[in-house]
Image (tube, rainbow, N blue to C red; front, side, top):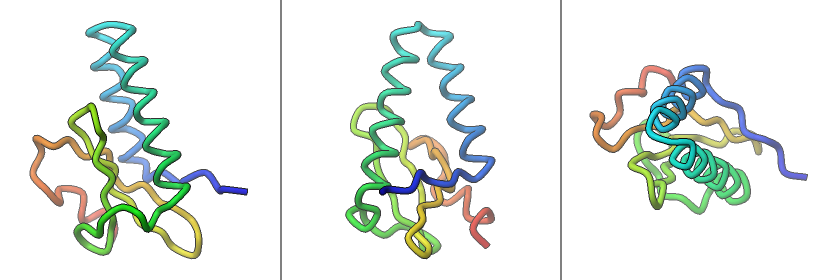
Length: 99
C-alpha cells in the first residue's frame, strides 16, 4: 500500500493560497488546479525516484499545465513535500525548510 505524502506546513499553505487564487478566477480554474495537484501527488508518491534531483537533496516534479513544481524528498520510504514552488519565484527560496 502506498503511503500518502507528508506536507510541510508551508507547502500546504502554498497549495491553499494558489487554490484560492484560482478560485477567484473561476471554479473551473480551481478544479483544474486541484486535479493537477492530485495528479502530481500520485505521480510523486508512486515513483519518487523518477523525478530529477534538484537542490538541497530534494527532487522536483514540474507540473505539466500550471506554472509550479513540487519540491520533495524521500526518507525511509516516505515522501515529504517541501514546497509548491511557483516557476516565477526565485529557485531555492524554500531551502531553509529542509535544514
